Length: 279
Picture 1 (cartoon, rainbow, N blue to C red):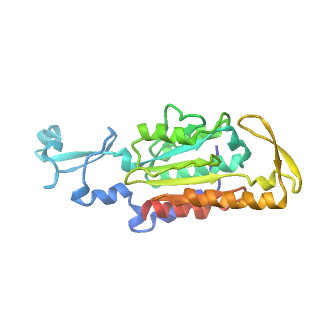
Picture 2: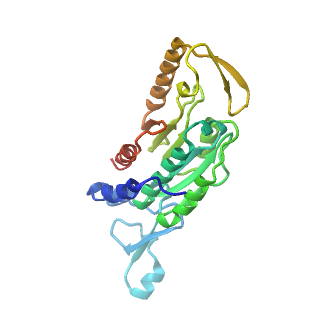
Picture 3: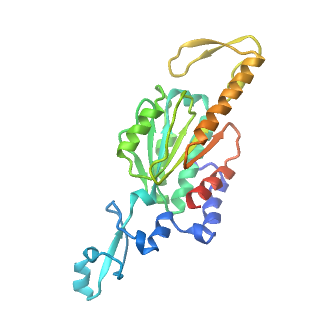
């Protein structure tokens, strides 16, 4: 899958030129001894000289024996250096602008990888995929791209169940959910001390229904044909309900919410996401 546009390549470099925001959030915390700690994964991040505030148990004694100097190893902390992507692949997403949906997610993944954040991607419909595809840097982008380019949209949506499954296994503190969020009463909460990013991709019903009278709609998830009244007042009521749904989703603490439709400009949204991640 190709990255959506030239702006995708430009955004990481432009954002990295900003002084403080050029550093990873985890690295910013690591500059303060109060927050310094080893990571939970086994991916080596760096080797540095032992400092007075380090735990003596973290000294690499083999290196000490060879060099007569104390060094400690730091490992990637997946909770700090990796974000989770939960991508809705249910049948209802086929009604959204699918190519734009794939391109937005792929481009955002590329931007985050270029800035040094890892990305772990799961797909879901009725439940979460068993394993998340992981990419640590731009060289691993092909893994994410391959999943997105072959994504098929089928099955019924159960975002609440997929979210609960991810919370049971995902250590990441920052998570993105990409969906049409059509489920009534859906409530998601950001992980403790973390952030939740919800990107809603949808096609307005008014673009599918003929104004006036009634219209027949095939539910993409159940294939049931439903007759929907669609007068001017029905459309007005639908718009009110949609606005209420968006407001409710966006009002959760530590949540970033954006709704995108066909042709919506994407560059400002990428930038807003980065501002929230590094702010």
